[in-house]
Image (cartoon, rainbow, N blue to C red; front, side, top):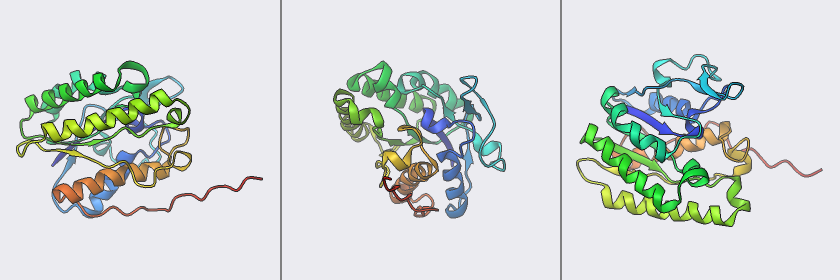
Length: 237
């Protein structure tokens, strides 16, 4: 199995993060008894100081270089990844994609229907490069903006409906598509450090959502076990 992580800022992570990719790597090492490799054209984190994907400062420096591979970028969405995915799959011989995209599209570039069209372009390009590829797709997890912006929240909900329909329409036995569930127990106050990007707890929740989907649908790995409980709310003074 050759896995490629595809995503936006929540997936590339920022300097000092573990990333949910790291949590997934830990999980596969602990539960998957078959050979696998993490592949992709990029390895770095986003560096806030330079606003560029140049950091190697993972929270665990023992995270192996080869396991750091991905196709994720700060500020990149379905719109940006659809033109890149075919070449990335072909060059790195990926057969399984774990994809978390959409929030940046809806926030800045495209509406829900246009974003769903880009999902279809992404799937077609990946399949053109590898006809037997399989993909697990994460719905958009609304961020803090959705709590204050009703129109944005509605676009997130609309896109997730379209994404579910797209997965149902396009999945085939030869190239299955899998819709992962939004991470159970995701609460913005604890699952993120800024209303959008995952905290250490959020990293585990994201990895767990993908891990459970892969285990239940395709028999990959075992059940995911959170390494730590959700933080307790801090009482108001």
